Image 1 (cartoon, rainbow over the protein chains, first blue to last red):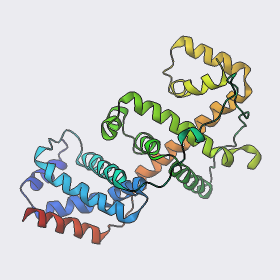
Image 2: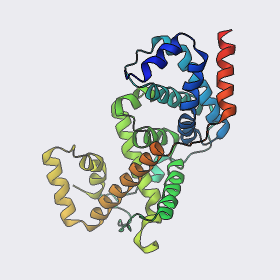
Image 3: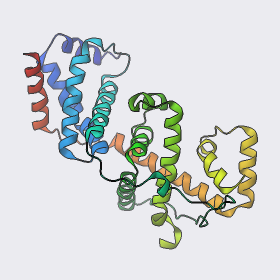
Image 4: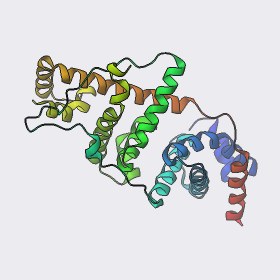
Length: 196
Length: 82
């Protein structure tokens, strides 16, 4: 536990209103951005952040300070976002199989893979590419999108991702593999050299 | 190894977790398959744009504090305490 967070934790445990305000004010912008990435809906994202903080306040007496407070809150809000996703009526999704490359019986691809152009170095081009990649991620089925977001965007390791999604580490790895292959396929029309 | 097999092993190859024997077979296939060379390159690009997006997400924290949400959270805490 760092020296800077010890006093805050102590003050929180004493019920200090100013400490609670400091905690919420400092962390809400970042946590709201996290919830937006999962939920894609402002109202749901705000609800998830609020529910996350309420869970954190309840769990505070059991928080041992083994991780940074900010990391602990991040995991709680990710969990609240995933819970909210599970309760939402899902829109019809494409099957992951439809997003993977198809192969002939002899193992050759139905269409040969073509070269991609380089990614952009210019700020505006990179921003456009990021926006396009975010849109492509949103086309993945939720079961695969969530694994990709947790592992590759939020930087959460395999075992923690497995715990959050109630999966085995092996299943996380398989879903991440298929999610990346499907994403590659979705990005293919954009990055093919012929279309540059 | 076929092109389809190569796709199955690509995540372990890129993360350098493929056992030596499989890695050799993987690279032997690449040596004779220009299509799979492009597939591997495009997979690496996909991973690179994901890493870029991840870094951007961690670094670009909105500076504006949503006051209404902060106030709602603090009010909900008070209600829960009472």
